[in-house]
Length: 191
Image (cartoon, rainbow, N blue to C red; front, side):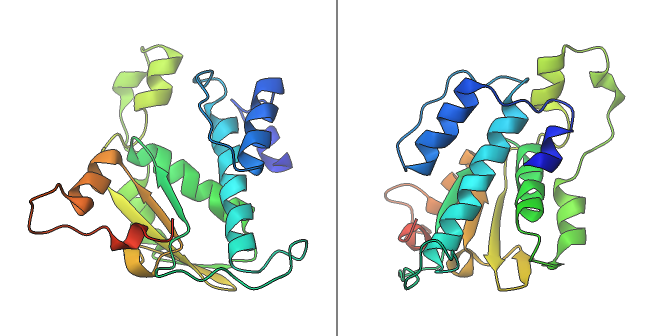
């Protein structure tokens, strides 16, 4: 997190510290104090929690030796993001927090699909509006990420992914509703 502290819009206060402590001990968290000023710091904290959780679940954490958890599917984490721009920032944080994953498959496709779109119309808008709607504001997406010892694969099939990142709409399109013929929710069994 030291590298992130130098960036604009990154600050950690006592509320953010309490947020991370609750995550770290696996408490359910409702954090209404999130705003455009602390959103980047909170996102970094829950990305750190995701990486920590995955390392423990896969048996890679030297502080918690033991067998890796086995489930019906490999997915351990589901992250809901409102827009592609938020997903983009979250995946970039994951990459920064896992430097041992030197190879990232399908990174160019990810940059093209989720990267920022040029739009000058936001310059006159307030900072909170720019933060929320700046970048790629598409709200229909899903992304699976598979992790190996020294690599990360973006766009992994959901049944083989360790991390699932979706918009609420994207998740709803996969899981369907009761009565629909095409429903898939087995990939959520190990989350």
